[in-house]
Image (tube, rainbow, N blue to C red; front, side):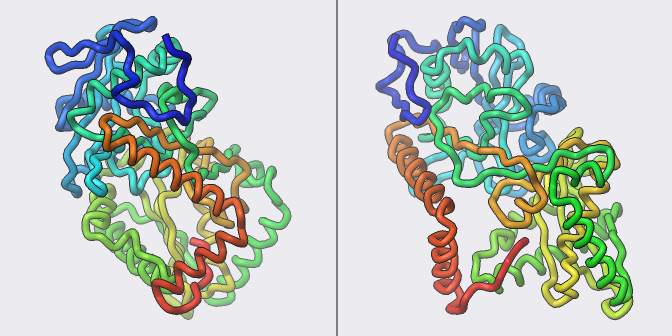
Length: 421
């Protein structure tokens, strides 16, 4: 047997073990020290819904791979599915809800909805997470290649924390590269005071009181969280408008502009079953007095168990910018999350100043890149090179600021507006 491949090495069909996985009834099968591991591919969600619901109940698994989240994306996007069902000795071990996206003639098998996920775990049973370390990396690679090579050129799992809640990711031995972006979290205690204690609590309380005074002087505000679908959809439309104006001011492309993207978020709102776990809920600062009824700031949150993720946010620059309504809204939703028993408030992936001000935990993310066919090898090399280059650039604040300025001026012909949302 060859030595275990380095974590950044590129696998290929030529590197498969001499005795590879067998195929029986359309399933790739391999005997491992952990037991017989089989992979089956499904092109629809419904046949595996029961297993999906079972696995998504595990708190370790990301809400972004939950059934309702993925169904909302599938209903609004026309990408072929290749859902990988893994079983160990006949018991459900994991599901990877993959869609096939073609980029520059390369077919990528990526997790459903990857452009709008803040962290990806896949769906794994607790027993398999414990047993996975006993499976040789080359065997795991060979099994995925056998199962997926007819469907895609590259298995690309982006935004994967290899260490999450004290556990190593069961696919961490597959080839991967560090993603240029990390995610930022704030652990929550029973009260807001306890939650912000590890931060500069005195300064943060002082800023909060100043925000309140400025808003009260202008007539006051309401923190709203609509529960009726019509009100939620109206607030979502307001977010799309605010975000479009913000991107235009910064000279940046509007990632929320495509019709299918907007339809996805509308469908998420419709997926809310009214429980404590919610795929998307909207919060906003609505002003009183001089700006009666105007929406100054909006944020969208998702919750699974004790984990709250901030999916997006926006502000109206024309409404009391000195009062920082966006920062005030974060205070209010973090406080509400702490009082309702959440343990983690997650600002998601991407390095921005306001996230560093609120968070004292930074989680590295990696992109798992397993070539399945020759075309995938070049795509994986390109992906790794771009990720490392972006990491280098983001590690140099002066160079990063300069490139952002060039990018914005190239889009709008004007210097970029300051953005923090």
